[in-house]
Image (cartoon, rainbow, N blue to C red):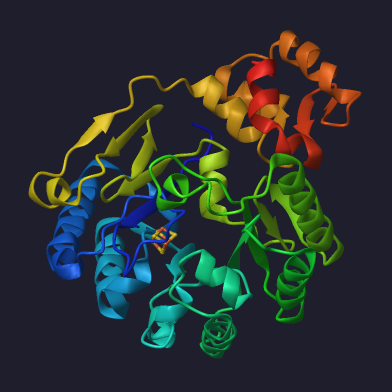
Length: 367
Ligand code: SF4
């Protein structure tokens, strides 16, 4: 592995209610929070003895990490600090639901090192927030940004869902303008996907989901607005002002090492990927990881690198695999160049914004 530091991901699998589009692993039974936190802490202790690397990013994701409240987040954080050497400059991110901002103590969180908040805003239109089954309104988002900024946490990321039924171009502009006006340095904009097994999937005939062409237009429109406001489109769904790219997520996309703890959390260590099962009770009673059997590092490297604006670079590829990027990849990538989907140079292959929209197909063709 190229990078000698470690990212730590804590999966917090609790939500106050389930959103109908979501297929992330989470439960609404909050009676298990205490046992969950105890299990997380003992797993941190276990891994701390095995892995001797400096930690430079920590990410609390979910689920909804804010649901467990300030004290429990800080308890987990102190366990990480006691069991790993956490760098003073570490990026520490907490995912927060705007409905929870009113009871979190951001000043305390900041004092203990939390320096980045990822706010699950999703939309600034109340009727779309309703369609999305979110438990917060637009006013909560605006207030949350104020509260977080008052605690002097400037590194804020807002999530935006693109392609919500009834969403208009004006809605996207309102969101992009808000981010610009509030000096929000990072935006994650995801195209809504109707995932199998979700309530959206079972009701898809009743809900007027947009077709692929319209979704592509909406995506490219959002890209244009955010680019014009000074955000760099650095990964398919991520936009940042200079220097505010998510350091933790970059570890995933650059195949650097990370340790994931919690039900459904994945790790990549020593060239192997492993995971805890999506089972909270099992995580509490018998936490064990399983190795991912079909993990192919090269395939993963190319796939993830092509999701970023940097694409695959020969130097990075060689550092990982000890050889140049295979010529056949260039040959196949060139097929897409005349359609404006890919750009190639002597030592790199990149997807364009239009290419991002067809990334799965292009990547499978290139490989
Ligand atoms: S709050 Fe987040 S994790 Fe929980 S159900 Fe909604 S989208 Fe999924």
